[in-house]
Image 1 (cartoon, rainbow, N blue to C red):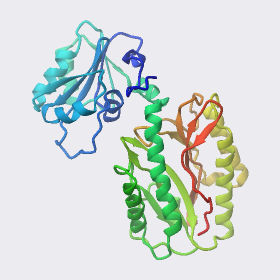
Image 2 (cartoon, one colour):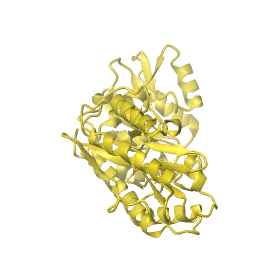
Image 3 (tube, rainbow, N blue to C red):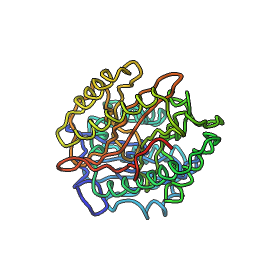
Image 4 (tube, helix red, strand yellow):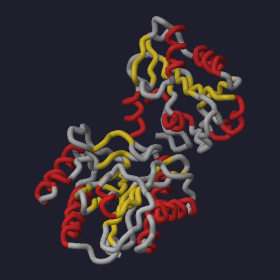
Length: 368
């Protein structure tokens, strides 16, 4: 992969085998191919934009009001096509780039705007439509050096915030207060925001992964689950630790130690060629042996990149092997209603001979 600011030796690296026009409207894919990223996401502030990828070049269709800022960021391979900010002109500019000589338009079925699809389908009625989602996911799975630098920066910002939390969590704090403090610490270290609603969940709430921080007061002897990430230069991080203020009870200790052993075992298995299904099955077997299988979720991890939670998802039935330059999480969790949940999650950069942990605490103690 090129290290001159682009991700590819050529854009042909991501072209499907079948000839066709590639039309991308997903924000993450646009950033991946063009280098343009902004957090100014209020409705109508940016305006619609799209990438049209043809054999000769990558065309970036943008509203005129963003032209100066975009030209400062985009990769030199991109050719800028400006429209006047109106939807009709946006559609026409895209249609003007779509080659009628190709039999197929490849696009992301989950994100292409319906009105744009209807317009192009009417303009090119004989064109077939194919989903390029998985092709893009595979292209983004193996990271370039350009991306690794950004991922490490995001991981470092989140790691520093967790160090702060480990030192400053106190009985009597409210969950929302802790969440705000953690995000502030990441902002101070260059984070543009959070890639998902951070979790600062205490007591029984820590056993419900769909919960969000509220006004609940953190109490002594309860489990406190922190799950969050930073965003730096458009790249995300994601990691989790579980703490307890004061002495945990026996059941809490058993849950924590079971999760810790699962994570430690899977961590030792990380290297190119390791089957992701093997990782999932190893974790599942160890959860069964722990006696907590009824409370164990088989979701073991996922890729991290522009998004904090990218393909592939390591769960039952996952296919494929780890490869050099992937960045993944390992995040086993056991969640017992009424008692609380324990999840331990780290990010790992898969290297030639193993894995480099991108997150982690200087002192991995969980009893505060």
